[in-house]
Image: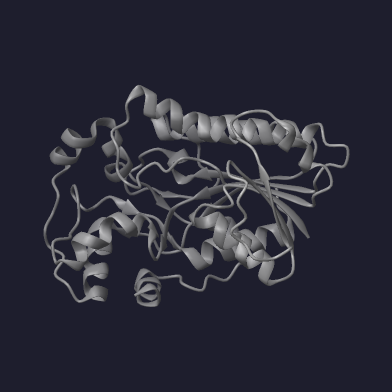
Length: 300
């Protein structure tokens, strides 16, 4: 298989490239830099800005599949959502996806499959409601961003199957959500935030990559929740992380402090969703790390 990727040098993308190369697939990675960090002829780096149309779109002709993972991080580290920040989050996802879809549509030999990033923020804050892929979108900023992101991908739906990757909170060493939490937890100063009763829909990085490979190999239409089958509350997450690290985890960060420091951006930590991967389970994906304790014990 020959796979074109945006976001291929990021946390998830780089590990996906490694996994594809390990099994003998070829990768074409779009990057703003011309440097190729992979020491193999199975990876080709194409220089270009995914938010801008360019010659890089021509490379989409002749590849077997496209994986679109580009997008600025939303809560790593937590940041106040200024108007400029919101625009940057939107452009890095929607403009990129629109350009990828345009490249697919004009390809002389179009790909056979398009996997495009999205997020569980699509559902908006829903309290304790259990959310699968059939649920309607929410109406806050992250839900609006995710809807626009998915709509941009679906403009290529008449050309090929489009798989929407509604990814949860990815847990891995040295990056993702844990990167900003670990320092305080290791010092014994960590703990839950807000009420702690909000839901933390997580996924181990190995299952994130495993699910992406599974979806590439089987080719499905529509949305998939990329989360583990057992979400936990923030209280449970903090307790389990503290126990795994053998550190206390009782210092709570009040919601008022987060809202003062982050403004609307605090909603990414306080207004969370209880999401289950219904479709992934239905099509037969077997999670390596279905519970949080198993995931954290593996990582630490």
